[in-house]
Image (tube, rainbow, N blue to C red):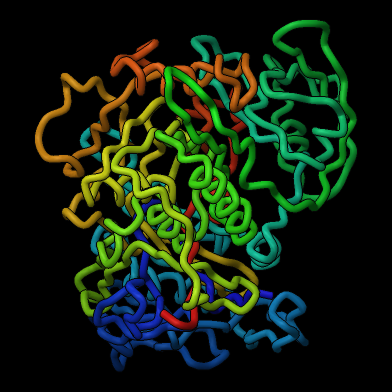
Length: 555
């Protein structure tokens, strides 16, 4: 079982090395940052310890707030309004760290923690915590309100979840769902369009005969496309407790079909549809890769063994729905693509705010297997590699985080990446999961770049006609390729599916089979676009839309 203190998470390239040990061996990571096995906060904040006029915490007495004065976050951590007691079954029965405290303790911890670690800490308004009725409402506003040049929010990745939900997902890749990955397709009308992008094997959806391309029509008799029962829709789609719901779907062809399903726990299948595709006198290796999790290592290695043994000429990585996962796995994939040319090269350079510059890190490509049951590198092993100088990557705006890290990292060492699909999600920032009082908080704390120093892709990587791409590879977010909508009318891995067909065509002819201006959306909504009628959005799941990394032995 993974212990909470060993897990670190980033969105995009950001937290590639936040808390890995500083041994620096094995071509994995280097830097001057300290070895951090637990979530901690630095002591070099502007007002370390507060001043004589402010209660700096450290006791169960309710602390007080003074604008501009930030006692160390360690003074408030684990002082809880409702402390948990006894052994923690999700952390090897270690005792809960909670102590009797108040809601103000929890708010003051969030305030000081944000001031010490948030990337844009000087852009947070220092509002009085007492003005907020809940800890959740206070946390929600502890972020920058500034916007990017395109008017999008600068910080779209500010979230919290329960400790239990976090631990459940990070252990063994378990998820509670129907096994449906949704494409939330944006339409010109206010009508909703939730269509199945893919189905997990051995899931309730698979047992019900559902398939890619089926569009959701109703839930428990309520019209989903144009209905207003948002409470029912959100709870049924993303249930907090097991309960049977009846869904009606409209397939691309044929009559509507009904499925009564209850969400269950099951292990995800991160690697699917590994195959060799002969086309145009070449052998293509194709693999659908959905998430960087521990259980992905064996099937991904098996896929690359197959590709290597069959002497493939080209590789197509289908990461259109890969929202992220383990950064070490991303570094492994980078090596398996590029091979020996990537050894000792930088996969990502992570930087923090100006209070934490000593913690900046460098993370490199990884040639070794990992024993995830023991959290250690297998130093006497070498992963299979294809030694390619070019790779095709299939993307949508559900391609994010560790997947974007693979794109950026490979381009940073001059591997030619051809992007087929639509613009990726855009997550060049990172954070640690910070636990306190039964909750886990995620606030942006770092940013990262490839070996050439590029990390400015908050708007995602965009497939761009070669004629519009100039300058050195790896220094911008325009990636040579073809912009193509996700083709939900064909199965993934089908040679007639538009993204795969375009990749095959491009490899042989150097041209795009189709080239469109926009595509479907499968990304979590930031809430800004959701109006009162259409407020059913895909939730942001940090462990699925982030980049997790662990403190591994043998680094």
